[in-house]
Length: 263
Image (tube, rainbow, N blue to C red; front, side, top):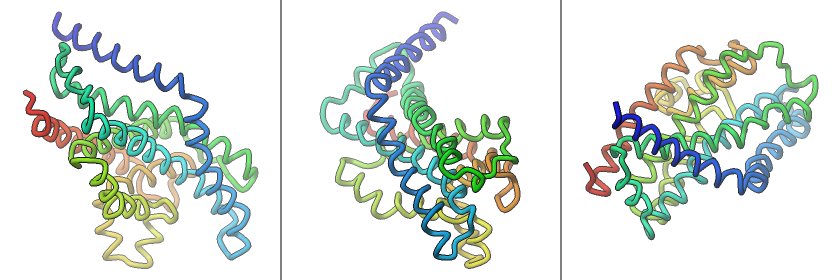
């Protein structure tokens, strides 16, 4: 019992340190996370409808942009500095000397990234509503579903970001990952179109795309915000998000032991 108290106390201290860093850079980080979504919302809500897109496409993109930036917050603001640390100071090795098992270090990093994603991007949807007005219908918004899927999706992004940081060997390979895999995962996540639309256009590839973990984060969040119609089943998405979180957590732990030769 004493050991678990020490683990909990140390983990809480490390997360508090992450929150302190976030607080110090909160304003600049918030601007960084809002500029791109606001651009997406303005273009998709006010310009693209004149080119034949549905009038509510701006609302569709507001949710997509929120999840895109949650993913980017974990993958860029989280994994990027982690990779830089592994290439230089390796402060992570200090954390391995603390009274924490190695698997808790993985959880600490993933939760730290997830906290960034949750806090910095939650304003995207209310700001989208203010900008789009009646074109952003929130009558089907479910607080319960949103409270389940939004932090869960960010936790999945956090574990995936840790796995990526430990998988690539350096910053150059991190850039190559994004060119070859990361951008494709993002573009086929449902950012700009729903999975059902993809299925109507290209059924075979759409079924393969169900292996993309980001799909469930985007579809599940849209089901929570805009209603179930036109989206994958919410509960299926929530189950898939947690399943992928476990997969990425286990992969991260294995990669950490291999990368740093820890027990």
